[in-house]
Image (cartoon, rainbow, N blue to C red; front, side, top):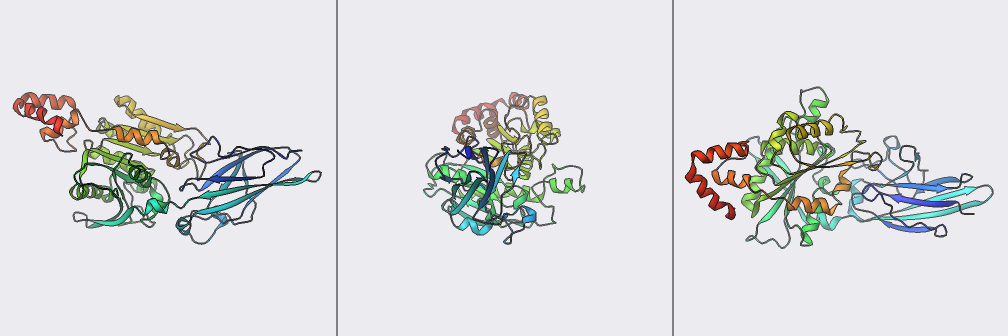
Amino acid sequence: MNAINNLKLTINSAPEGLIAFEPWKKSYDVTIPVDCFGALLRIDYSPEFYISIRADRDAGRFGYAELDPAMGDYIAGEEIPYYDYYKGWILRLDKREACFDYDLDVTVTIDCGSAEHGTDRYELHIHRPSGIELRELFTERVFHDEIFDLDMPYELYVPTNYNPKKKYPLVVALHGTGEVQEPTSALLKKTEMATVWAKDSEAGHNECIVIAPHCTVRYDEDDNWTTLNQFAKGRTESPFYPMPQLKVVWGLMERMKLDYNIDRDRIYLIGISSGAFGAYVFAADHPDAFAGMIAACGAANPSRINALRSVPMWIFHSDDDPVIVPSYTLEPTIRALDSAGIKYRLTRYPKGQIFWQSGHFCWEVLFKDQEVRDWLFAQRIGGVHKLKKALGFRSGDHKTGHDITEETNNVAAKAIAAARQIDEL
């Protein structure tokens, strides 16, 4: 008699399953992505059997060297609990800083036993590469902003075959709250927010330069890209006010334009969690600067939604995000975009698809999607944007197409000259 009839192992970015189960096969080898910190195991087994699941490696949290089971850390050899919400067992994988220096290998044992039939043991051998090769492509630097007297650390990727005579798109990646008080290296370890673009670029696909600015604490513990954290604590009336750290990113971008041959028609903005709040605000402040934007689990200010009219957006959110709750964040954003007639793309992950660490972590999925990455790099500033540039309008002027038409009627000679320049921009 087979104790187990089916076994399915999934991760956030691959819900279709990672192994082909055969009842007679007792051992399976699985490789997971570098930013995967949990796998969901579902088992179809005969009811007279008892299931006991254990792993041979501890699993702790980033920023904490010691384990604390009360905070969800897993101690090797202890029984892994069953989660009713997900209808399965979550196999937690270590995400402490030290584990990023080497490939992680974990053996998970599944004992399926009964008094009558004895015990069958199945093993899952999970391998997670360190990703250190990609991280080594980045250089940690510090940008000093004289206006705010603020030092901003950032991670920089420049293609190894960089050619100063060639224009390169620039990707600006804004992290979430979890990284504010962590080392700058965490920006590259915990997510693929920055490294995935370098991976494509090194392969000769979507070549680009990448900066991942680090919003560190300068003023108080609630520092962030925007006043989101202050708002959550009742210290301000809006989560959408830009903080100095966000404004400094603009100076960093200008520095990149001086240091490298940046294609100014192909600057892309990425934001996850509080970084998505920041991305919406940043794009609204500089609507003519960005060719496209990806915002994961964030929210835009409905009162400034028209400022985003010219920015192509792809929005991501999980329906069961417990941190950035959709009814208070995503849905007001979508209603405002729809009311303004602004086009956008939206991906909503159904409840339960994003399970670790919670429904909040949908960026693990989106950065694996080549379609998303290719969509972003297909966006270019053109049309009205180029005409505005040729006419000398600054980013932040917020002029509409109608405004431009009116002004060109008044300065016909300048408009004609500008039109001739468009193909050269």
